[in-house]
Image (cartoon, rainbow, N blue to C red; front, side, top):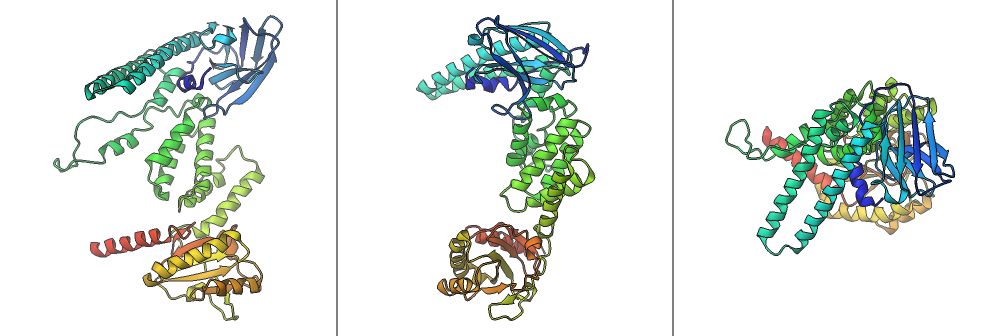
Amino acid sequence: MKRTFLAFLLCLVTGMTAFAADGYKIQIKFTDVKDSLVYLAHYYGKPLPTIYKLDSAKMDKNGLVTMQSKEKLLGGIYIILLSDKATYFELLLNNGDNMTINATAKQLPQSLKFTGSPENDRFSKYMAFLTDFSNQTKKLEAELQKAATRADTMSIAERGKALNKQLATYREDYVKKYPGTLLANIFRAIKVPVVPEGKHYLEDGKTEDTMFAYNYYRTHYWDDFDFTDDRLIHTPIYDGKLDEYFNRLLPPTPDTINAEADKLLAKARGRKELFKYTLHWVTQWAQNSKIMGLDEVFVYMVENYHMKGDAYWMDNELLAKYIDRAQKVAPNVIGNLAPEIKMQTVDGKPMPMSAVDAKYTLVIFWSPECGHCQTEMPKIDSVYRAVLKDKGVKIYAVRTEGEQKLWTDFITKHKLQDWIHVWDPEHKSTYKSQYDVYATPAIYFLDEKKIIRGKKLDHSNITVLLDILENKQKSAAKGK
């Protein structure tokens, strides 16, 4: 099967059947393959190539294979995969299903014939509809490339709209005819909000609401996703929806992200797999994000869910690692008062961070033996001399490790004497845990009150952050 066709398979699944018993029984007769090992696999939130193998059986010399289990099964889109790892087809499988399939491997999925599975019969009809839809779409794309006039382009666009309307109508009619079935719920899950046409105004009735389309789309994004149907996790839909919502629709601010995550988890609570996937996805996304400040979301998720027993799938060792990581990040999230650092200067004089009298303090944890530091420190100094110094910024540079002579030689060579250089020769400071210094350089930006206003910085974005902070101060001053 071609990958271009796989995009359409994302929309396909089965409805519920009356469960005679737990488990499944699938008998498959291939007309043109024999003696192959056959695998039964399923999706878990993501599209191909991410699949999870559930069962396997050996095909006999006549091309017949039987796969069965008496264990309770969570329904969804399942995959029959041959041992060549290239031949496969999708079917709709629910707990209690007992079906027979006839197939010709070289003509998949068109050759599939199901017995004992009305859901897969409807699936096959939808597949045929999608095949025709795909062919018509490709024809329109070819015509569009040859369009010579604007009128031709507009005509093709209108035909494209009509074609898309046919697909939407097909799905809407199916949902009405088979409500609550898995395929109906998948059609609803992949449905995107349609923003009402025309101009829209603010409450005064005169000012056009330029944010209406965005707000409407975001507000109604999850309207048709059934969070009570755990079978949706065995489809390739959910991960993509989470990605679009958190990465494209929501502003990257911790308060907003935390609130939206709470809403989704509240919807999914009571559903084992959807809840698990949501909590894991948001927590990992926040932990791995390169966006400044979103580590606060990671801390929030661990403190409000993992530490309260919601991460049921984690063993004690893994859970302890999450909690330990959150506890290391928590003291240095943006908006917190920066933990005190008690150090001494190159000549041995006490110089705590709180003693730095400056409008802004740039705290840098670095090592003269760190290759990245060796490149970054001179660049930061260039920014400091060009912009930061005149803006009232002072640099409090903490040497984390490295030979003392190498440290002082680096300062002299690169003329960094304007910085406040400190170290902890007796290793009494707890700065590594307080500031989560597991790699260098680690850079924090503090305001006059030593409140953390930025982190995960480098020479390229320090001035951007400074401009944002100063513009906020100006706006606040005007507001008074």
